Image (cartoon, rainbow, N blue to C red; front, side):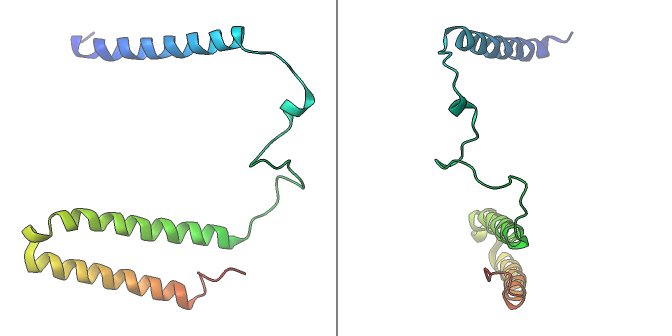
Amino acid sequence: MPQGYLPILVMVIVAFGFAAIALTVSALLGPKRHNPAKHEPYESGILPFGDAKRRFPVQFYVVAVLFILFDVEVILMYPWAVAARKLGLFGLIEMAIFVVILLVGFVYAWKNDAFKWQ
C-alpha cells in the first residue's frame, strides 16, 4: 500500500467511526416516546392533505430551467470581470457578443410567454 494513501485511509476510518458512534449513542440515550403524531408526514408546519403524487404544472419546470440557465450565465461573467483589464478591447467585444446572445434568448423566452404564470 503506498504510504501517501495512509492518511486518507485513517481519515475515512475515523469519519465512519465517528458517525457510527454518534448514531449509536443518540439511539441509546435519546428519548423514546412514540405516538401517532410523530409518524405523520409534516411539511412547513401544515399537515398534508390530498394525494402526494399530484402533477405539477410544466411552468414550475420552465421557471427552474430558465433560472438555472441565466444563473449559470451570470456566474460565467465573474471570471471575465476579474480579468477584464487584461483582456482589453477583445474581451469587451467578446462579452458584448455573449450578452447579446443572452438577451436574444431572454427575448425569445419572453415572447413565448415563458415568464407568464397561469
